[in-house]
Length: 130
Image (cartoon, rainbow, N blue to C red; front, side, top):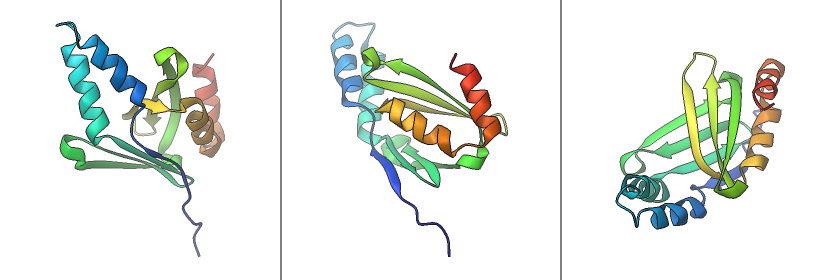
């Protein structure tokens, strides 16, 4: 019998990302950022469980990517919105990257993901966060 999958975080990007980008959108230069934030708010969803990370996105949320923790080689985080939310980049063992944009509670999510990684991936991630 397998381990039951328990959800740690399920939801979309931080609402603050949308609000700040809407304000930036009042300028001509900020319009592309605003459009990106609106698309993320409408169709991007994260599901982080004790077994995997799922990202649903793309046009009308039709694309889905599932990553199991054993595939992750390292993880990096960047605070945004005065530290209220942040971006994360998961580098996979095959060299590809998965970007998680505007993650709410990103420090808690980062710590949760980090504890699920292999010791080598934890060490590589810790070296990056210095």
